[in-house]
Length: 158
Image 1 (cartoon, one colour):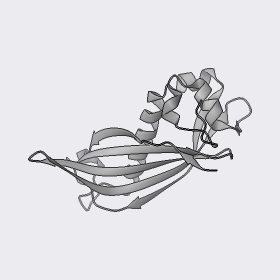
Image 2: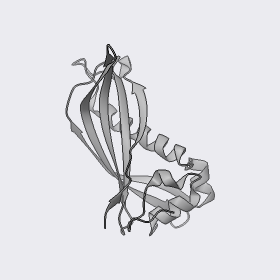
Image 3: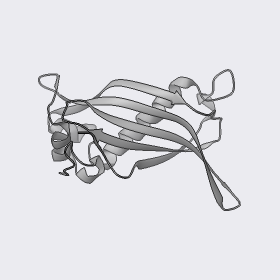
């Protein structure tokens, strides 16, 4: 069973000039960095800093990532990047990110989907160097705010 958290975690950033490519829009690799930033902030907010994970003998590893580009981004654009975590009974879990350009025009807010990034991750035991079974339970045990991890594979929360 595949259970995803109900509300996304969101971070806001601005596009920086040095992230542009020769065509004047954000370089393709930067979209992956935006996803990485959202992931790390999401884990940090849950209390899963590298130090906290290390005290539980864990680290989080990226197994794969895919980006689907929807619209160009340019220097100065304001972005919101959300992240949703989903766990199954398997060792890997996924995080999905939507990179959205946001603008306020006279009080009206507009949103343009710029990209979607999907990542497959695993919780790695730092001693055995193997992915752990039941990553939701292991991560929730290490987290100071496990609710930000969403439900486990059977819809249970830690």
